[in-house]
Structures are given as structure tokens and as C-alpha cells.
Amino acid sequence: NGTTAHTDNSDNKFLESYELKSDTKSENGPHNREGYDFIGWEKDGEIYSPGATYEVTDEDRKSKNITFTAVWRQQVSLSVDGGKVVPLTVEGNATEKQVTYNLKNIELSVPSDFYESADKWVINDNGTPCDATDTMTVKFEDKNNTQVYNAVSVNVDGKTDVPIENNTINLYSCWKPT
Image (cartoon, rainbow, N blue to C red; front, top):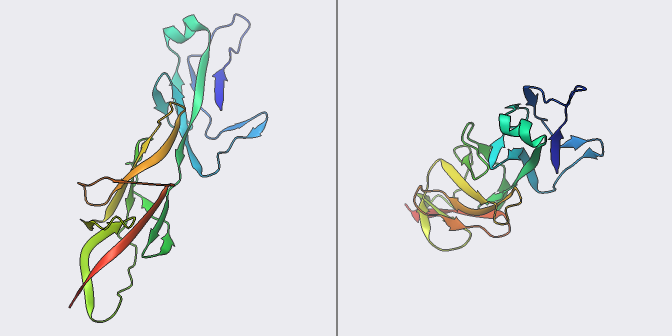
């Protein structure tokens, strides 16, 4: 899905700037990708936020064509101890290549009175406990250079990236006997 700037006057000159669309609607209706979030517009390797203003360059004027391509980021499914949760994005930290989520408000159920939290997470049944932190960072890649960023790994301890399969992250809390 793309958008192209058009000249507005009879002498075929571009305006000085253009406001980029806040969504991916066109004359043909909305363009959506199920399972993905629209995160902006790409031009020459740079990603612009939805609704941003693009300043026309001399190179744009010479080419007589300004084309932007919609950029999409895969939605990630998260479950904690088997229950699906919706983590909150940490504001100001999201890019096309990574998103940090806040895990502070996720409530864990203690298996019994005889256990306490070991402050560890196990990710996707890989069996390796990671230190529990208040955030989870998911990394995304555009492997096919199509402006579609898919989830590739998750990190909950600031040290260990664990691969993601099928855009699903399963976190399991670890408990130790009291």
C-alpha cells in the first residue's frame, strides 16, 4: 500500500510540505493487514509517523514523484502462565524494529501457600529461566524488505534474546518453595 504526492497547481510544482495520512485509507477504502498494526510511511529507508509532515526536497522536485509505502508491524500475542494478557506499550520506546512492553501490572497466581516468586520467567517452554524484570522487549525484522516487520525475538532480562515462533510469546513464572 502506498501513497504518492501530487502537484496542486498548473505549473506542476510540488508544495513545500505534505501532511502524511494518519491511516491507510484510499479511494478504494481502508487497507488493513490482519494481525498487523500500521506504524507509518517509508520513503528512501526512513520511516515517518502517521500524520507527520514531510518536507519536499530538491531531489523530490527533480524526480517529480514522491512515493511513500505503508509500514506494518506484527501484533504479538502474549500469554502469562497460560492466560492471555495485553501488555501496555512503554510510551516513546516503540519503533518499527522493537517495542518495549510494561509487565508491572500483570498479576501472577501463586500455585499454593508453600511457594513464593523466584523472580524468574521461562519463555516459550525453552526451560531456561531469565531474571524477571518489569519490561519485555520484542524485536522485529523486515526480512523480505517489504516494509512488513515480523516479531523475531523477545527479551525479558536485558541480556537474553529468545526466538519467537508464530508471533506468540508464552511467559511462565517460576516459583520456589517457602
